[in-house]
Image 1 (cartoon, rainbow, N blue to C red):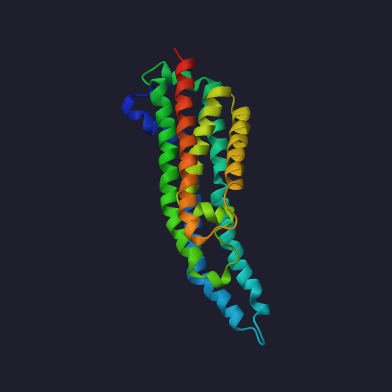
Image 2: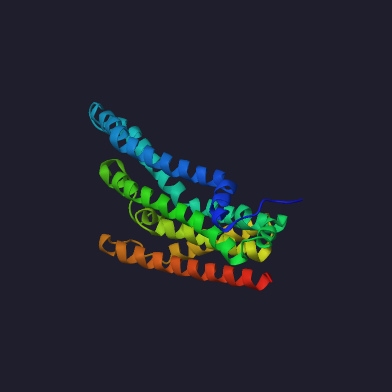
Length: 252
């Protein structure tokens, strides 16, 4: 069986074609979340306030509308925060593990793509997508979260709210990508690599959550947020370096 060569200038195009479904799903998720946040803030909040104002003799009968508004933003925040699970699973299973198990990776290495360049491209493309998605999502989320605080019941001590307010949510995604790639290289089988990647990133996340101060003063938000971001990015760099070292040791 033969496969098309991967010329140096065509590697990115090949990876885009190979992983276009995952990239499209990510783009739809981010843009859909951003669009829904905008709609909630500009339209949904007015409906919630109208329901509260229409209540005779008090506001209790309109609390359902405020609860719906609060829960809608809360679910978006939660899904974005825990998207690192999907990234870890995809990186360990589809991105690396499946290609090693099927032999597709070694076929590419035997042609015009070195193993190191293959891995760099494999990580670089989704990493760029994660950073771009975070750059779009975070400012819109911060705006939507602060726009109608009278309808909201959460705070910065909530784990998802804390992370989604800044670069930490992107750092967790990048870390999941690196850990997933490392798991794929270590196990070379998609399902075990998927399970290991999700487990490791979950343990890391829960450990760092446990060390966040509670309650968290507003003045301490950015120092705490950036410290955790730096910790996660350091682990990301170590996992990435280990992945390249593992790949070097396992290839001629």
